[in-house]
Image (cartoon, rainbow, N blue to C red; front, side, top):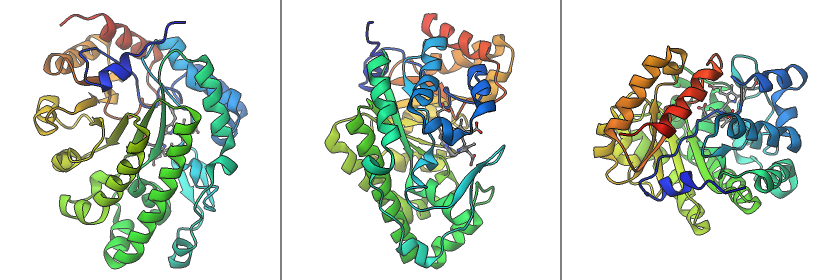
Length: 335
Ligand code: 1CP
C-alpha cells in the first residue's frame, strides 16, 4: 500500500494538487446514515472501530488525499464537566450555560484518561490508512460561543455582551479553553495524527478590533505551543475577509477560507501562505456542468500553494455522485 503524501506536499508548498473535504466523513454518506439509525453521534465517536470505519469511508469511496478523524469539536465538553447534548438539525445544546463560578471551576482535561477512545481510533487509522490523518479541535472562541450562548447563534449577541461586560472573566474562559484545546491536540499528535486543523467557525462575527483585543493572543498562544511538535497546522474560519490580513500573522501553514472572497484577492492578502478552499458547498447541489465551471474558476486563479476543498463542510443533502465526480475532475484536469 503506497502512502499518498499529496496533501503533506501541498501543505509544504510543493506544486502538487491535493483535495479533501471538510465533513467528508459524515452525514451525506449512505453508510453513515445507516449507522445513524442505530447509534447516536457520541456512541459512534466513542466506538473506535465504528469511528475509524466512518473516517475511512471517504478515502475508500472518493479517493481523497486526506482523512479527517470522525469526531466532533464538542467531544472535550464531557470531560470538562459540561452538561450538553447534540440536538437533531440544531447541533450542540448546552443544558446550563456557564456562570462565573462555572468558569472559575472549569475542569482542565486529562485526555489520556478521559478520551482514550480517540487514542484507540487514531491507532487503528494509522495502521490502515494510506493518506495523512487530520486531527482537529475548535478554536477557543468557537467553543466559548456554545458555552455562553447555549447553542449556535445567528447574531452572537449573548457572547458579545458577555465579553464586553466581563472582559477579565472572558479572558479567563478563553485561557482555560485554550489550555484544554492544546492538551487535546497534543494528545492527538502523540496518538499519531499527521495534520491539525483548528475549526474557528464563528470568529467572523467579530470586528477586526475586538478580534485583535480579545481573541488573537489566545490563538497565537495555542499555535506557538503546538509548533514544538513540528506538525502542519490548518486554521479554518468563516466570514473573515475583513480580518484575513490579521490571520496572515498566525504562524500556521495553511489558512482555510470560505467562498465569500475571491481566491485571487485572498492570495494577495495571504502572501505566500498555502490557501485551502474555497468552493461554496451549495455548488455541489447543482448540475455537474456548474460544478465544473466553478471549480475551473478556482483552479485557474490558483494553481499551486492551494489545497482544494470547500469553504465549509459538505451539506447533508449533497448527492454523493457529485462529490465523486468533483474529486475525479480535480485530479485529472490539466490547466
Ligand atoms: O446527528 C448527527 O449525525 C450528528 C451530526 C454531526 C456530525 C456528523 C455533528 C453534530 N458533528 C459531526 C461530525 C463532525 N463535526 C466532524 C467529523 C468529520 C466529518 O463529518 O467529516 C467535524 C470535523 C465536525 C466539526 C464541527 N462540529 C464544527 C466545525 C466545523 C463547522 O461545521 O463549522 C462545528 C461548529 C461543530 C459543532 C457541531 N456538531 C454537530 C453539529 C451539527 C454541529 C454544527 C452545529 C452548528 O452549526 O452550530
